[in-house]
Image 1 (cartoon, rainbow, N blue to C red):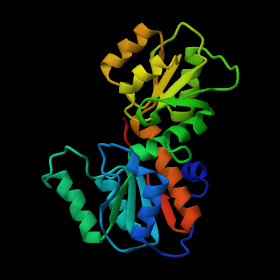
Image 2: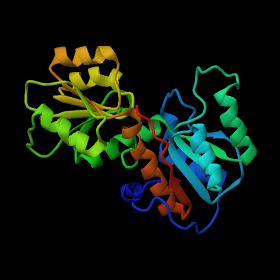
Image 3: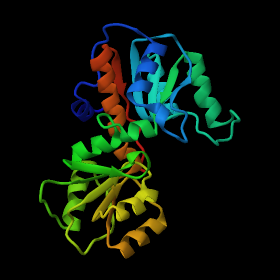
Length: 269
């Protein structure tokens, strides 16, 4: 965990004061994140049952082997990830990298919990809400199924040029930010969706957005944006989805006094 992550999460990691029953914790988070309303590709909530008491949690973007091993090294009893171990429609065979991940989880008694769409759109802890805070965007509404696309502005009456907006996003998210399509008109209404939000570009266009910010897009989305006159900016799938798990870790610490540590496993995408 890097020092600046502590600033982003308002004390993501603090001294644990007590242990909590795993099922009570997961039940609280399931309710708080309203997992029941989502038809998701992810199995949200508890994916692997481990030790019954939880006093230390490691959170991360993806439940890969590096994150699991970091949790074991930290003597954590639970991993919470945005991208979990199991997805609907995946090959169910436990072989290769899947076996390695699961073997480490089971040998250590880790609980594995995942929140995908629920952690994208939550109004307080969601990835979209965290992106808005980071870019100082004032949200004015949402569109699309589950409100996956947010709409907003940089400020009341604020108008910026495409390259000015792209440079601002780059200052907040780093050098991998890319401007794929420019808008000839001034940018007033901005739409955003973290992660692999390219497929929701059409919702942003239909809502009248002048610019769309997301994590990653497919090749054809670039042409759609160009031909629709909408600025298209990507800031990285991983980079735009760190905010939700960091905010969730801080929430668990505040709410229950359980140590919750964000671990960064870098990804270039």
